Length: 114
Length: 114
Image 1 (cartoon, one colour):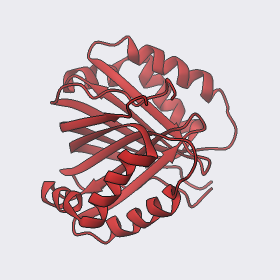
Image 2 (cartoon, chains in turn red, yellow):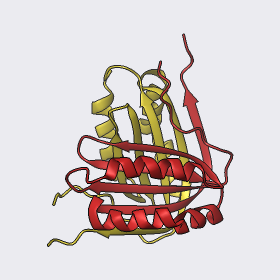
Image 3 (cartoon, one colour):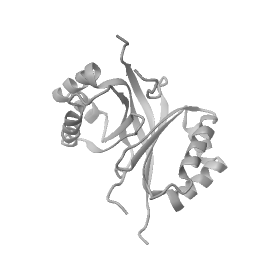
Image 4 (cartoon, one colour):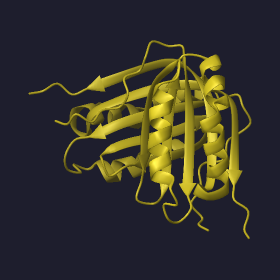
């Protein structure tokens, strides 16, 4: 058993923002800023959770969950986030894709302790 | 530069299935089956792409992209996939969450070669 677990799905409908990326070489201040952005996002109205993983091949996926489109727009327009996105294009990312999606159904599974 | 890149977003609307998981200890035949499922999914009608990452902490995220709900349902009901999901609950996963979502907008970024 581990405490690590995916974010529990809220009651649909809600929104998911899928951010898939390949980083440039080196850290260049990325790690610190990424942690700061996760803390800041978690303080925004409508934030429901986030999951993030980067594999040994370098491909990373972050999925953040939001109550509605309004909360996604407000986070997009947050100054610190907008500045960070510009830095991401300038320094941190080789390539990325963003998908904004309305979650229609969800379920989860948790192994029972034996 | 690298050939590694996120799946390019199709023209919305399309569907994303976000599968977030924590594995049990050991491989137990998981790796081979996971690769087989990716190959099989890619052969299904309506399959548009897939991205997958598992971080060193053990959290994994796989996002598959589909043309419509019908193609997601057909893949869900594919016998080999259904059998594999049952094995996943029995052996491979400590916990997981699934979010089925309709992508409303998407964009991507590719660094230009200098």
